[in-house]
Image (cartoon, rainbow, N blue to C red; front, side, top):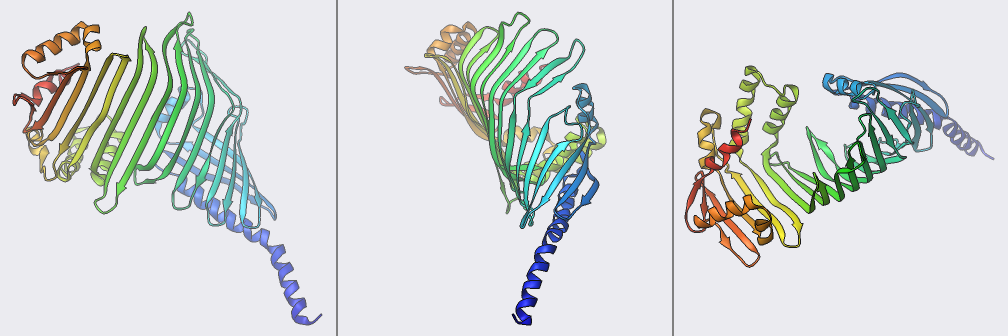
Length: 421
């Protein structure tokens, strides 16, 4: 065997022997960068100890809730605002495998298993074993959750996917009431751009109920779903989103509702102005004069660039011939300038439309609805159809303009709601 072959074999052996050390070093950098990116104004994440070995490493990290409101709520619920996580990391050829548990695993039996590539992309599985949480006192409760799973993929570019599965949750209040949830699942994909989650999410719930002290149902619902879709237009820097809620077989205060559907969206919101306003509100829900002054230019920018709100569908079905459905759109046209100097200019600038349907069965079932329909019929604002009654109107110059040409000031409809205590 010549010296070149011996050198090549020796080099390969040296590389093989050193590779776990290299993977461990690269992995430490990846983990340290990942932990650093978790910290924000509400949460502090830090590495307490990193013991890097040849084939494995031990890592201890600490997470502290900085938001005082959230920390106080956690304390009320008997949960800590600071947790320490112990991780055992294995060095593979091209990835790191880690199993992480809470320092006090008995308090919350969570286990996180991750596989992280050397470029930082990570597959994760978070598992919760049977968990029972007891809070003492008259306002306390016993919370029981069956084994649950959250899994997905996270990339270094911020893209995230997840799948959630919580078979059942039971909350037994010390006062005697009970809440039950069954079949809570979810999935989503997207990423965070500035303060906005851009992507898609869906949560489904097979059944939920609330029982009184005699274990009689106060509320129940089955086969419910919430869907959230949002998008970001990079050129215009605007954000749009849609929220769809579907509920079936509701029981509330003894009344049965076959289904409720609500499809709400907003769009073309200036993301920079909207983000500043969100942060101002989150930092101080009761704004001071200085907060209001700081918000003024962002409110002006929001309206100047225009946006829309739309109830694509709001439908309630009590039975076969007892239905209500409405949809409407309100648009703030682009170029609605300096609204904070004169808020009275907002209503005349709005455009939009309204369409509402009320079935014959619903009208006869509820006298107060029948009275309102009869009054609208007398004013020729409502059209009778074979199925029920319809209202159609356009929003123009601060007025709802009906099919017969009659006008009703939008302010007259808003005042009763604005004057509610």
